[in-house]
Length: 150
Image (tube, rainbow, N blue to C red; front, side, top):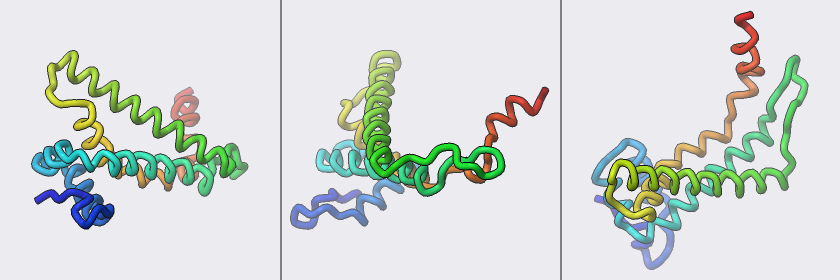
């Protein structure tokens, strides 16, 4: 059964939170309901969003985008990694708000924004995989898809 991340004397239990996040990713309805109802899970959901955004930005610095013949096309500075983390986190929170707004207004969904934010934040744990971008292994993939048919 789901346990609060603050069940050990007020300290964050990251191990339990990660397991709960994986249950949410597997679309376990019981875990999703428990996460949505646990008000202490809001901070952990926000932390998952920020950490996944940071790792995605860090991945673009560690594995820069390449152009033809291995020339570096874009590599952010360390300061830009933090800018991108902040921007990505804000955009994701806005996207969660927008999806919740559409679900409530158009589809008459029940539940508050905070409940939806907790579940979406836990589900975004998969964003940690963004540290390994695909662009170094697929250089100019979009370019070749567009111009390869000519």
